[in-house]
Length: 293
Image 1 (cartoon, rainbow, N blue to C red):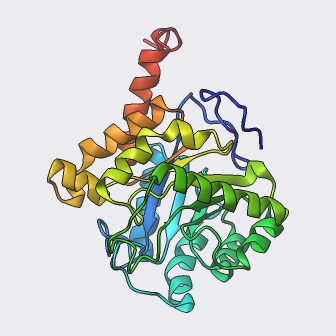
Image 2: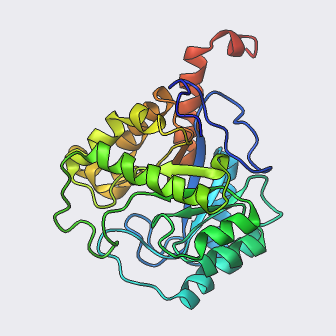
């Protein structure tokens, strides 16, 4: 890790499947929840065929990564056992591997689930628990894939029950730095580690805004950063809208991530996000686009 890197310098994501992004923009991680109870799209893609079609559509719309999860981690969500999680995600993963031109990420807290998904062809792990499963680092090291480690205060079923921070940015950064160093001690290369401040995971309304405002501070840790704010509750509180009516808020966060050089943004609305990022890039680099028309 090089903590002296300039704030405007993008961090590469390790792994042969993660070539540099085609433009100066965040990679778009399209969300695929194969669950009956996720907060905004629960049940929408629970059927394998629907999940497959939605994944293909996200790729066509501009997704750089597809993130597949079989356990809802919305506030108040209930525990799902390992067999059920595997039953939900494996048919979808197996239907997509080799048929889409982008890497597939598995969104799981369990090392055994991550192993099964990686054996089937996934090329990334997104762990909202930041490797609470002691077997997870070994699995990631064995398959040599990138891993996202996220800050979450508590567990999904209780994380929004009066969370408190004295200094949310300082505390989240300290946690992410400790987790990243832990993974390095476990033999995982630093360029395979991505950090996520966990917007909406055990955070108060103001905490989410403070973390987004402080992305530059999070980036000084020296690792690529993932931001997942799509359709989150704080946007609903701010805009006074339901989850599926928060597109303006989602796009505002995506624009802020572009401005602050975030490496990965995790979103539901892939097409709209890709369009936003293309326009922002064209405004910043007009000479590279003017010859096309």
